[in-house]
Image 1 (cartoon, rainbow, N blue to C red):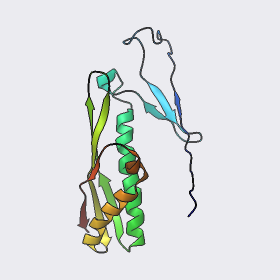
Image 2 (cartoon, rainbow, N blue to C red):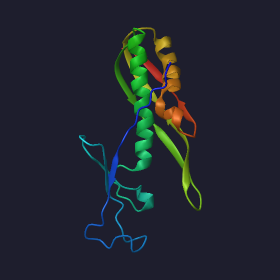
Image 3 (cartoon, rainbow, N blue to C red):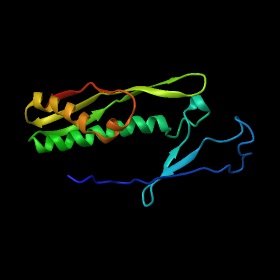
Length: 155
């Protein structure tokens, strides 16, 4: 099978507004926008621990959300292909970032999906989480463990 390549573009925009710009660490806003042409922009900032705005998304939250969303989309596809009817899906994913003197890095993300099914084999539905994890583009691309503690409940 020939390799297919997909590219994804996004933009990030920031400006000093009425502020002083980057004249000092405490002097500039971390508020910025993230977007993709033709789609709604995301109001973003750094985490409040890094002088950011609590009311805006931060890159760390968006990374955890990307992992959760990718897993869900694969899972729903696999359930559909295997005759399992999912009627509700939710996840409370949790990422752990460890900080040292100079920077930080994610050490793990735990996905905690709960799928409610109306029809199909509950054990098969639970097992499809393993397959979804194996196929998830984002989980396959990160350099830290992503674990899945899944639950499937029958309607």
